[in-house]
Each structure stands twice: as structure tokens, then as C-alpha cells.
Length: 251
Image (cartoon, rainbow, N blue to C red; front, side):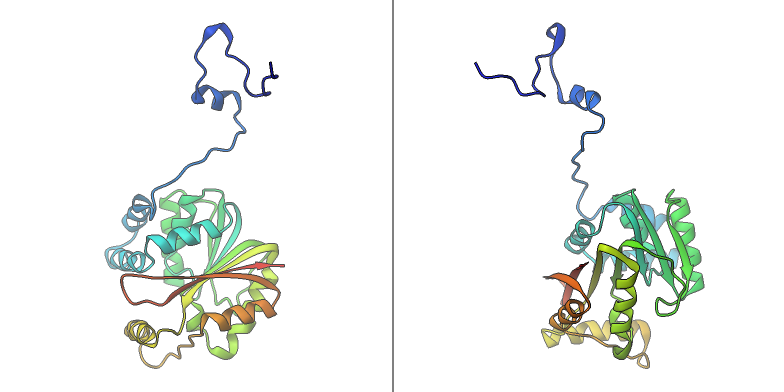
């Protein structure tokens, strides 16, 4: 007869052995949960914490970053530690990623003081007291590292082309070795999809602000040169957005 495995002792006194009992006996055991894709309740809680105009914007923004995108990014981010949110705006994604993994301590930075004020209120109403938000531009804001991860969602193409590399260098230097830089942006193909996205961007920012889109291979090459191991995936959408998600791990 083979010896029993260490964790397969028969229950005492004839009691039925259950998974519930196992969790009580081993409180340090990792629990595996599969929260709803897209986290509709998490998004609804964020929207309820915003004024009406910003609430409508939040639903539009979350409708653009659809279930597949949010789920991919949520899995690529570290599940705990300090995480930098570049261009955090109203704090929509800091609130979302903070609800999906409460161990994340997100530091948001955005040049718009009003948006930062709203981000602070949203986090407070959701009980995300570990988050903090600061007025400033990532290019010159005084941000104290190190960070376990950073994410830049649809921001890089709003930074002038001749400044994009310097921003990536700065973010790299803020990360711990092995830290993850997560970029969600727009690639440049197919051309019709890029045109669709640019028209929507122009509706938001006007015609005077320069927009600097790059092909996803160009981002990959630049990040690799800066000392990152790069993985990327293009995420198709119902609408013709040429989404690309890039996960760059600092070597």
C-alpha cells in the first residue's frame, strides 16, 4: 500500500472533508477567483462617483477599452505594489485596477488640476485610500520611485514625437528591475482604422495639438533598445480602432 500524501489525511471522527474546511485549515493557501470580465459593477461604482458630464465620459471611455482590452491589461499588470498611472485624468483606470486587485497602490499624475481633484474624490468614495494623485506632466513632474509597474493608456501619441523616447527613458528609470511598463496605444495600420481614430482624437483635442502615432514595431524596437523585454498583442474591436497593447519588462 502506498503512503498517503502529506495533505491527504483522513478526516477525524468520521467528519466529511470539504474544500471549505481545507481553506480554514490552510489560511495561507492561494485562492483562485475569476471576476467577471469587464467588471461591470466596478465600472458602475466608478461612474456613480462622478458628476453627470464626467459620468457620461466614463461610460464612453470604458466602451472604447472593451472587455478584452481591460482583461488583457489587468492580467499584465502586477497584482500588488506601487503602480504609476501616466495621464490618469479622472482616475478611471486607477479606480478600476484598484478594485480588481486591492493590493495595488496606484500613483496617478495628470497636468489638469480639476481632473486630479475628481480622481481623488472617486478614489475616496470607493475606499481606495492607498491611491494618490498629483498634478503635473510626466515629463517634468517630481515623481518619487521606484514603481513595480507603470501604465500609459492612449497617452503616448499625444506626446510630441521628439519627446517620446525621453518619456520612456524616464519611466524605465522609475521602475524596479523586472518592473512592467504597460502601454496601450494606436498602431498605424490599417490606414483606414488610423484615420477613424485620428478623427475621433481631433474631435476631443482640436486640430492644433500634434498627434504622433507610431507603428507597433517602432514602439517595440525603441523599448528593446532601452533595455526592455517586449511582448505585444493587437486587439481587434467591433469599432475600427487599431488597438495595440505592449508589455515591456525592465531587464
